[in-house]
Image 1: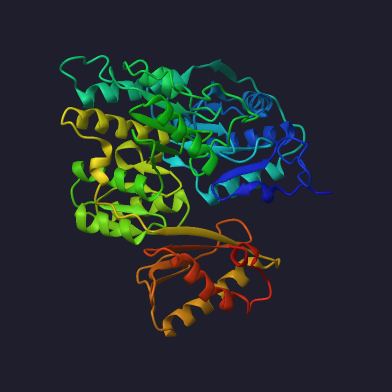
Image 2 (image 1 turned 45 degrees about the horizontal axis):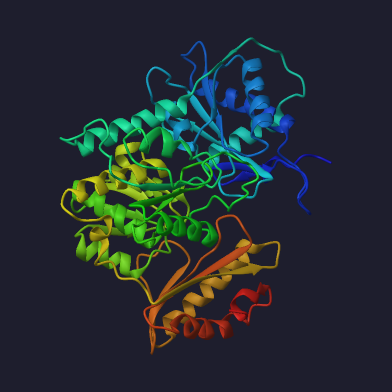
Length: 506
């Protein structure tokens, strides 16, 4: 049976099943496949760096069980192709990009073996050049090269060196905090007196506790799950996961710390918890990030994904006097839109998703959870001198009474066309229905403002990759989500290829 290379593509990443043992999931990302991907990436990079005698590639991995074996196969293929390889061992996704822009390393390409927050049996690859993360069409091109490679090829003699790059990356963050807090009492350890709890979920983010915060004087003794463990025995390393978030909130309350920090597996996403053990996540994290950036760049545009709340839009536009630009889901979509706005002359310094992906113009528009947390830590230290907390920056941010996401499965092969039909017909209904108003300047799906006894909004959009149409509902009234959902059920029931279990069993 011919191997399906295209199935490995997940937008601008490669994702696959790397370990056996999960029912219905066959391994499609083994050492043979990964070796071909290494050769393909080398060829792809070589074509873009014809002036270089040697192509330099940095490779790192997260804590997944399949990581060491796949990394070894990937590196071996690069060496056989003639590359100069930096083996960065355990690393973070943002650090692997930084290998391409940090002296004296200046790798032509950086590669991270990770599948973010996906289950333990999955793995994948993220690719970088000094221009940033690869786009969807680049991944397609690399897969095409891999598919056309012969089983045997001529072996060249590249090289491999081990580099503890996460230590170098950590020092970049340490020096940034020292410089920007600029403590007159203790420049070297400006976080002395602070207690902070880091939860790495047994992913790759444990370094932030002992190589950044502790070096700066913070008490991180309450931190948890810092040791890399690809079984993820304590909770899913995902700031959006309810169990993971409860775990870090409980730890902050128990140890009475000043700040809680939680990362996903590969540290490109993060969330924080305030001193009361309350999460600053999703819309609140977007608001806090916007408040910090707006102080530095007043009136600039904040690009977010499509499911951000009406309250957030009001906070950015009316309280911060910035400009909220609600765009599409997908961290690359949000980042690329902010880059596009800057190119047209509209100043944008922050691109952020409610998932915790956040990218700043000052940091190469790289979605970096540790960098975002670092910005928050700096601001927290500065505010403490004024007797204030991070919460003071978002005290005017309104919270909805209720919000919920329903994931409606589409049970047909041509799910994209079918989903688009559902969305289109809902748009026609909304345009004609009293108390429903189509929201203008909407870039994804159909967003409807509701004011008919309950006040709120809903958004129906296509999932980026799955046969699903997510429905987000938010209400300013108790019971409002139920009322809006009830109105929508009768509409959805006219479509036979929709599985409405999640909505009906709400």
